[in-house]
Image (cartoon, rainbow, N blue to C red; front, side, top):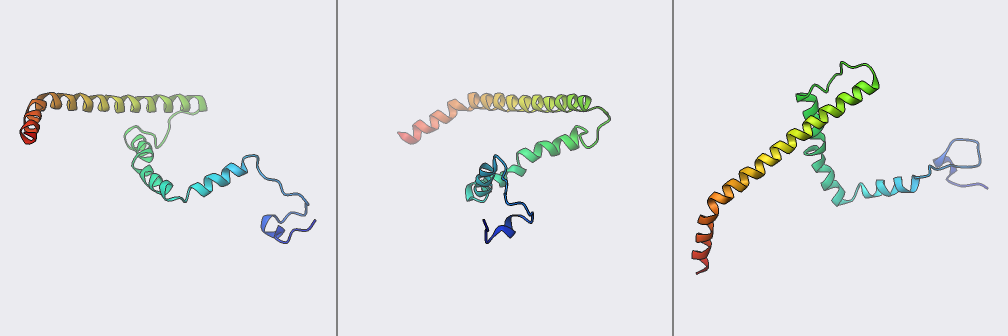
Length: 119
């Protein structure tokens, strides 16, 4: 069998071209990567996902490690990111409670204004 575009796929002398088991899925992911929806989603990556790693490097000493074994480094990283998640949860809970506090204070004034406008 001779393929006219075989030189584009491989330089090998073998007569078979092998593909990875998941190559079809890899190609689907590559195709989806250039859609407008994905480009918008990827643009938000720097605001969300990469921000976590930047915070870990700047505020939690993740630029370098003082541990030597893989198990020790893994435990240290897990502990650091657990602490970061607890901080994020605490800030989130504080903001929600602060919002509910302001809402309970200003709700009577807001309902009176809405009733006056509707009447």
